[in-house]
Image 1 (cartoon, helix red, strand yellow):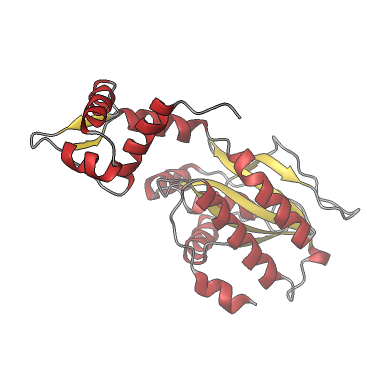
Image 2 (cartoon, one colour):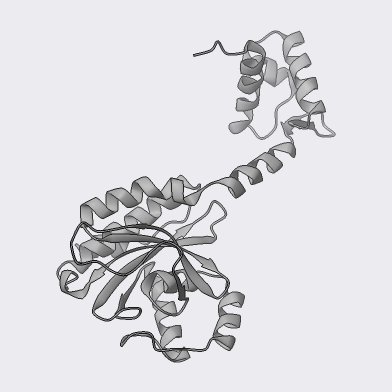
Length: 262
């Protein structure tokens, strides 16, 4: 490992003080950092000039607006697939069924990642596949947690098509399912995209608390019997929450659902 640059380390140590203190005076920075006043004064001046620190009218320092730019860049460039994949692998191995990651794209949902089951009987799904937001558990969980205005606009313009024998085909039924999904933080679909299939899905949120994606476990109906569903729901919700937390999400999932399921 290369030797760390001492000036950079000292500057980061100084900035780290603001993780627990919103405002600090120069004297407080000297006291907390335990560094010479001249050294702190020089570093603070450079950090302020570069926009990493700002000084208010009372002479107190705070983190500068430059951090907003960097923070947004990190958020925008974060690859959800890379973040979610380890958790998806764990869920697939524990449940033994296919796991999907879906995001909204226009009026559709698009599969951005899929881990196949090791069973010989599998679903026909692949990365890049699209489905309408009203059909299938993972698509619907994405729709359920969109802002109200977006949901209303979608409901006003949606044109239903029966894809499989269980596909939702009326606004009334869809609204009921969306309300249920919002209460429970999960949803289940039966033969909505393919006959004799079941899917369990939960939402994933970003650091702003906004819906980012949907996570689902899916497979043939014969392997999703009633006695297995509670565990599938619990594990799917827990995994979705772990992924959300890895992305900086702070939403609290309704744990009373989990404790009653198994």
